[in-house]
Length: 621
Image 1 (cartoon, one colour):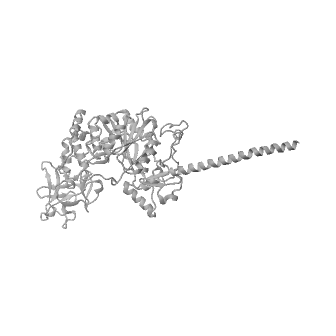
Image 2 (image 1 turned 180 degrees about the vertical axis):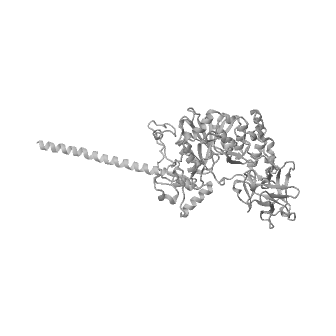
């Protein structure tokens, strides 16, 4: 009897457990199917945007060599759905600690210390590549004027070396209370990985309380990847705002639009192909916190346009300009070295490059921001530099702040033709700020000012601000600049031995240095045929001088030590005699090059005439 009861109990358990077991199996299979489907959907959403080319990647962790034929993998800039936090919203802001970032629903950047480009190292592509890969490389260069293919191989959170001097890291170096800044980044069809790396370097290396917003200003891009995909990606980051221009306006007006949306006490402008290093922001804000009239720029390091190697050095250069109103770099002058107590201290700079700087927002408005009559780009950096110094401010380069920048060898963008935008902007600049010194620029352009618009409001601004004269600026801020008015002669240097006449001709830009000087039929339009004959016997344009060391007559950086750069002009014989060799400047018989030959009255090829020679100004022998 007892055994029968036990058998019944066992049968009841079997009858109850069997359907329960089948129910569990069905539920498990159903949930597993959903998980697989969700994973598949998740993988489908991972789309890599390489400009306008979409590359499907099944898993962002796939080794590079397995998908190289489709293009380099972007391992951490995939567009993913944001995961809600337990509270249902975002917590914190980008730039907080790792724990806080994990609570934002934003995937943490992968840690691959040996990944391509980490610590700013170069990425060199193999010589042997498939035709599809070569096409991707060529397309990237064509669209961007840098190696986009290499950029796409590098993490948008890549690590960089710390180039700062130890003095920059000393405790108490900066004020404890610093103003916050908005960072304005203008772009037009910027490459996806480069633009994201710019944004992430700001977010990853800026203290959260010092960074109010990043304002991305789209100057009417037409590539798909910077439209909805960019909006969706940046939706992950509450501090990033995107504003768009309804038509192509150029850098200057794009920056003005960004300024309209700025609300922080300081505005910082960066280009869209930059990378900020550790500790880049505090040194800039510290100077403005101490004096709101300081306008400050970081050290601008070079990101190689081909390998994306991050280059930096210990030296500091300051900005200048020439009488073509072109920005240039030069060494810190001796008087500035004596003023500074340490190489890490801020350095006064006569001008700035203009792409990367911080300024108090109200002081910027007081200075009249940018001249809205300037078109597209060009000249705005010199205008802001001049009026900063002349109207009560100070322009500094901050050695403790480093930002890398891709310097392109050409512009990949197309503009309307038929208008010399740079010349128009520079004429406006000269009319308002250069006073009587504007004549030196007009000489360079053949006094062809063209239609430069109405500048009365800008002149009125200068008067209302009580700004100093341009002579004060040259005497006190940039005394190293060669003043054409001090020259013994100016204009073309015409040879008298041929008809039609030939003139000294040559560009004096950095790329033309150490190369033979040219000759060309005289055209009377200044430009590359405009030369100055200094009191110290130099035939020069800006910082390039004619130099003869026994071979070719070349353009060489002016050194002021006479020697190979000393030439003595006799207006009676028309000889231009070289100081050390005692021979004369000449044109070869075949009219193909400038030479130095024995001085002879019977040789017409050694006779020259300076266009405007002032006999009352004597050489300093």
